[in-house]
Image 1 (tube, rainbow, N blue to C red):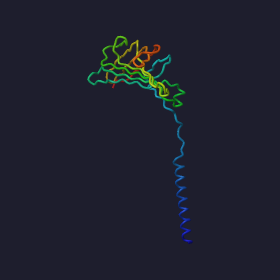
Image 2: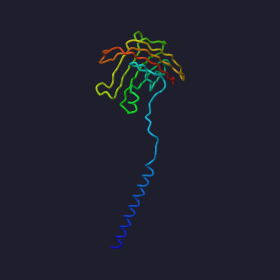
Image 3: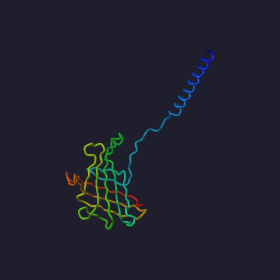
Image 4: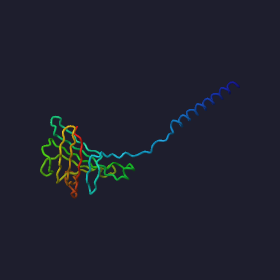
Length: 187
């Protein structure tokens, strides 16, 4: 009996010692001082939009040549964050303004919404709005000025539009001024 108690006590000590080694290892490895978290703010420094009287920096601008057989075909996509600085820091739901437009071929410098067939869509995407998270807008007046670039060169775009919300194919609400400029390198 005495021998069994000694093995039992040795097993308890070994288990206790092994447990302490693991605990100390976890404390040493698991605890360290890291830099304070800084919430990344996406800003491409590539342009701005003016919407509802506010100048908003773009967080993305992309110019693509969608047709490899036509070097002057273009597709443009820009995104601006409509959240306030406080909402960004508080990780509020995304609230973006996007503008997408494209041309089968750039055959002019100035394009007028009322005269030219411009495939376009302006959207307000608000993940915090449960009733209408996506609102579509169409331009009813204005122009887009494009200074085209060749491969590897910068292309600049300026637009000055009047937009209206589109619901089920009908334009609703009052006209809204929407303008801006951006640049990107043609790849």
